[in-house]
Length: 272
Image (tube, rainbow, N blue to C red; front, top):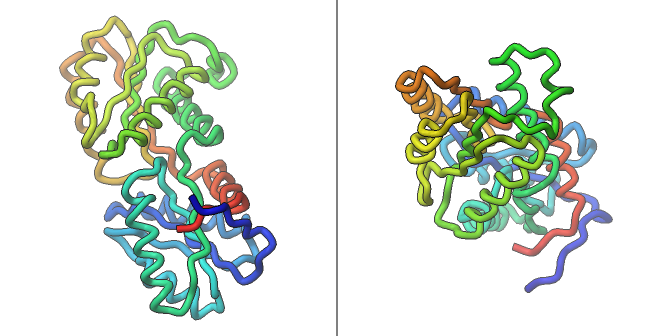
């Protein structure tokens, strides 16, 4: 295993925020807003953002711009929740190829967000916001923290991947969340590649004795998956009118996310 690289003392290093990418305009705005916050926090360092696919600027385009601005070394910062194919293969390969074409070197890459405490707290905040808005409880933030919600079921929904390690990390994330916002019933499901799938989890919740079901997509930004999940929740809510069904927002633009990404670039990196 290569030794960690400490870049904190280096000058002339540019930081490239890389998102998965979406055709959804709202999702693009959310990602770009996070980038603006990230860039503000790292001023006066050179920064840029790119999408792996489905939107522009591409990694190639952004690295070309950073080269024109005088960058000679690049740190890639994947805005991804878990270490799977995109973080481990696709982003490093695309960045390395683009950097080589423009005479730059890749210093390393930061870790995905995974079980970072700030992301767990941000997820809990989205849960409280969705639940309290629906219940119209002005004192929810103060009263529900670390208090058992005896009638609530929580379905945490991850994107899913073929990586067993990433899948286990998602389950660990759900367990950490349940320590902050304890509920009567907790289920973790996946959109792709892993079990249980979303529909199975929603049916299990519908068959439970929970009066309120909160479906929380563990996704960073708006996009096709969020739209699909809203449709599925609307359908099952119509089929189970005795229960109250709530779907949370994605993690979305939040200074907690930008601050976490900024902290990651200051930690020792691993070589690509």
